[in-house]
Image: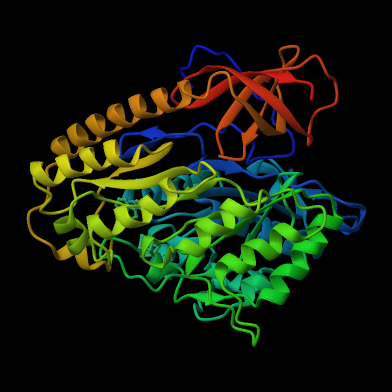
Length: 498
Ligand code: 5AD
Ligand code: SF4
């Protein structure tokens, strides 16, 4: 993070650590404080129940061992936690090198073409290096989207499995061991993913919890409705029961996940609203912070703002993707709101008595986007004053309605617009963060630098804070930090005693 503050965070328990670098890839990037599309090799701490059943090594490969790499969003990170949980519970051991693993799994992302290409280039490495007896499996969105075609493109792959079938993974692997050559698990309309008996979590303080799977919104550019199926919400009692268990295990922060998390509809007779669920989760003894992502503007209402205003445990941050500032483009994207309607939601957030940080997703170069449309996106940034934004060049995706739209924008022009957008947003963030200098904020301490007395964590508003403290044992604690400096992507501070 080129912010003049050379801070290297020690990786603590695997991945998902604070301050995770945001990608500044050709196709887009993040100007903000949260982590996005990246590649992670998750490593999950083992408990005694996990192992002991593994056969001796053959070929350098441990039988019953798996390597798991994750591409994509937080939903994928959490899915990988579930996959690891399912396999560890069946006696598999997790290893960190592909050449030691009997099963190599890639949990994939297909939201943009670059992400999907990355998966195939990774798979290509095994054309010649795959060891005898190794199973190579593709999980997640690319698996769901490409299905059995993956076997054509990469014949050394023997397992293709979508997110709704992860619970069946041990059975699918057993079938491969019994001699089957190729296996798929591609059903979509099951909510089994919620019910894994054991989920490993790779951050010792923050637990992710899916409350709604799939998406019904059908934005014209997006593969998610095809790869993750229709919306299915999880019963509120089951969510709350899991939150209580997480609190008992020592987690203090819970992040509720869903592609459209605020479209949550309690399927049980209680029928509690999303905002009521937020409050109920925050009330669980031991839970200090509740986050939620991603919110869809159409279903975003005053009740959510009121919940944040009145309940300190609900974090003061809303991720509300706008995609474009032009009503014409929003219509072509089938986003179901106009610029004006989106700004009404923003007015609710700006009107909150408790300051709420707002982040967003933006797409430039959607088919037919004129210079004037693009300028409307730029002016929206001025109006909203986002604290962070993921910005992407439009990427045509298979099966989506926008694939057939006319007036494609040339790559070079998309890149030009993206660079302008990101630079503008960077300056907005610099100014917003600088305004915080002198304030004291609460930070959950998640990282310790190799450099003495240097720590890092997140504020309730989800900003990355790098700070100094002479204390020795801060990890997992909530501390008060005075902001002494700022850059577009993070804050600098000093631990204060209260
Ligand atoms: N092209 C570019 N960006 C996309 N996104 C989703 N689909 C596409 C696409 N085809 C972006 C949106 C979404 C985020 C997760 O990814 O901004 O909010
Ligand atoms: Fe994709 Fe739109 Fe659903 Fe988000 S709301 S996952 S962009 S279809």
